[in-house]
Image 1 (cartoon, rainbow, N blue to C red):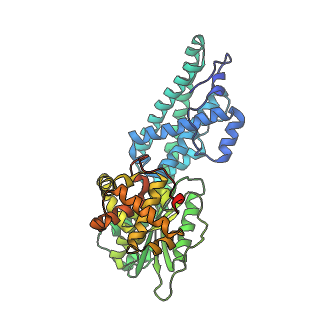
Image 2 (cartoon, rainbow, N blue to C red):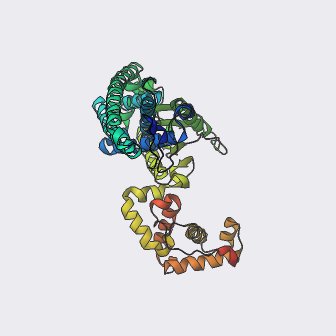
Image 3 (spheres, helix red, strand yellow):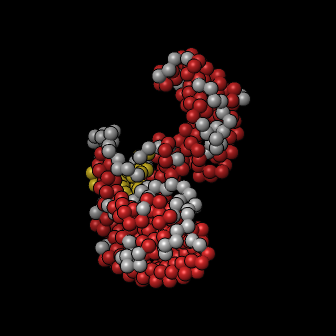
Length: 444
């Protein structure tokens, strides 16, 4: 991180510059207010350091940041704390209150039933890492004669700030925990977890507590948000319920699991087909992984397991699945990726140079997959790809050259590898790759 020395006390704060740009996790209002007072570069530096602090905490206390959505919530808190520290260094009279973004993460930790000791340990880890980052930045940007005084200011300010931060976070954690216990959510969550764990269930008692019938058919969904905001929990619950209704479900059970993740079930009607979600306007960053429709108490658990498998596929390759994915559509890759290192080897062995992670290799894989699925019909594959038959002929020939063998000799294996590559993409392909770079459209 480069900068220029500034003779004014704490002037180095306004000269902070990030090494790399990171998208902010805080609200637009928080970023705008900090930018007005500090400038855009120091704010970008705080965003970068906030991301680094979240990763340090995740390494030291994995429970606080496991999964994409919890990590983004954690990053939002560390970013806000870093911004507040910079504001205090630039102006000791600035508001010392704990940022709301940090409290949102604290409330989620309470709802996820993470121990307060882990939360406090995460704060201590962040304190040490933030102090180190500020000390290093100060040393780069101040004259030797000023450093001792600036180091003292950083130490005193962060000690006082983190002491207040720990006290407020502890109070908020305990208050949220009490609210959660009083709300009845704990009883519903424990009942659901007991069902998922395979414990004996009294269906009538469960139906009364959950307001949901276990004897019928079930369609489960796991939903989460990649970029949480203050309204994420309510929006996620509303959207999940709407999607289940669109898919023909009458009664719906929605169970928040933290602030940015939920589990839900719906009872599909059998008398009429569900409405296709079609052009449903999914909110930005929202993800929905649906299970299969299954019956009874075992089906309640099995559909949820299917949805969890589908969610893992989405997290492995979010760009390749869209906002919503159905387990039946990706069942084979979901099963294959249970052992991801073995699957990578399998795809590499089966596809050879065709396993390259580049657009041209992807085009050849898609053509070959459709060609094989259509029982080697060039016309059918061309119709589905909307290209000329000669183009399909060229691509199939080129794909077979990269494979090094006729895929018909190992058809089940070739199809499984092609399907895994289609759904999981970079998670199982060779980075960069050495596939062909010429444009096959020239041969159509």
